[in-house]
Image (cartoon, rainbow, N blue to C red; front, side, top):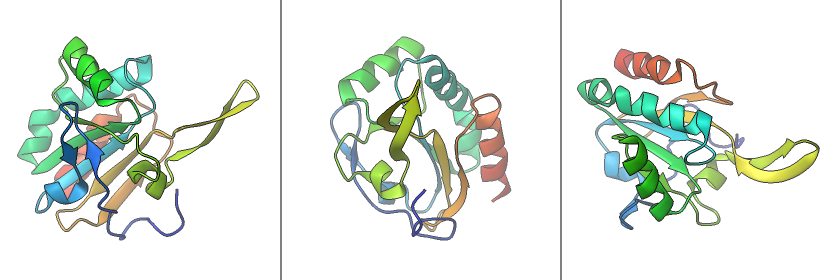
Length: 157
């Protein structure tokens, strides 16, 4: 995570792309809470489970005046296929541009697997207050039970 952006900070208002090619940015959610969940890749087991879990709780998030937005570096067309394949209702955005929101937040970072280093998305969730400030951050998220935990935190705000 970036040293300068943490709990209490305003979320950078950097545009991303929706599956239909439109621009979307955090300020579009002004006046409501926002759960921004960053995940590595569409259609992989953990990411699929996470997206299905958030989608299953979408009505409860809405009842808590909390918007959902899942973010990865996958292109918009891949997001559209992922949404259709799994009947996802939690909206997705592509943060594929260099110096995008995931870069600004430090969740696009160097990772390693089997001794090989590569750039990848750190599974991280941000809860943003209606004022646009970061209320809570979950780093290195474990998927099981995560969406319900985030819902409880959003509902308590």
